[in-house]
Picture (tube, rainbow, N blue to C red):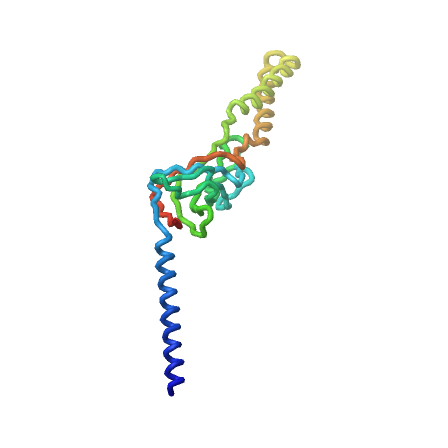
Length: 207
């Protein structure tokens, strides 16, 4: 009987000691973290790691980048250099054959601080690049064949022939323009970007 009582006493002590250890650990763990808020408007300097382009990227394709230097709040580094930012392609439009400029757009949605398993949803504006217009290019392609047509027409049939030749040449120029696209646009890997937070983000730090 005494043996059973002694064993029961020892077991109770062990359980109490274990519970105390767990509680102490949890309290210590909580005490070692601190939450700091990145205010709206905070700028994140980012370098793009995923190249994108109007003619090769697709909408909702994943893109990634990394923070290029520490971001601090009141002297405390909240987002260390090397932290990840993740996002998607929001728009990818190829240049049209006759009109329509190329466009590529991306947006970053997630912040993963370096050395942390935490992921934070962020609100940032889309970043876009618009391809150059091609009006001048089309004018050259359409106008040059027209001039050549007028010259040929004049040699063959005088003034009347020149008028006919101009029409034929212009038609040929339009055909050339219609079979070629304008210049595409992209954002290369290694491009420096600035993200501005649209809303506050509370980040937990281990102290």
